Image (cartoon, rainbow, N blue to C red; front, top):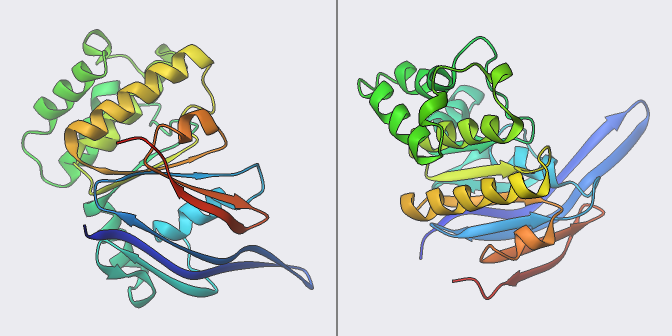
Length: 229
């Protein structure tokens, strides 16, 4: 099976005044194409920083990231942005919907910017799949947190990404709503065959993915397969 994400010897250090803070150290792992994968750890363990490096939003101080067959270190920022637009989807804890756009527009605008003439049709179908057929013309402020995250799910899958990064996707939701969102995420992911990388502190969620990497203090303390098929 091909490796869609390959991380080797990754390190990230930030400078604060005359002090250096090492956030990640000697991080190495691989993600198979089509796999569901979790990166878990307590707050401050470096999970979100690692996501940023995996997606080329930040650059490491040492080590390499190969994403969708490309060495990110060898790409200019605009090349990394093009790669993300074409291959990568994101879901964030705080939804990141545009407040002045309706649910339908939040999903369709990224597709329209890519010249997709079926953007509206595709977006309606995705919103229907996540149970929001009757909310397409509502603005984010008129939607509950769970509904906003379902719009974000539809948007993330709209451009059929090769790999999807979900950063604490249920972090702002209550348990019941979060469970519904996760089930939708896993169902949509299975249907589309997308590689899914979830950043979470929730072991119950992580155990529903095929592979779990545990971080502590910026280092990997375990990397194991689960019984999920």
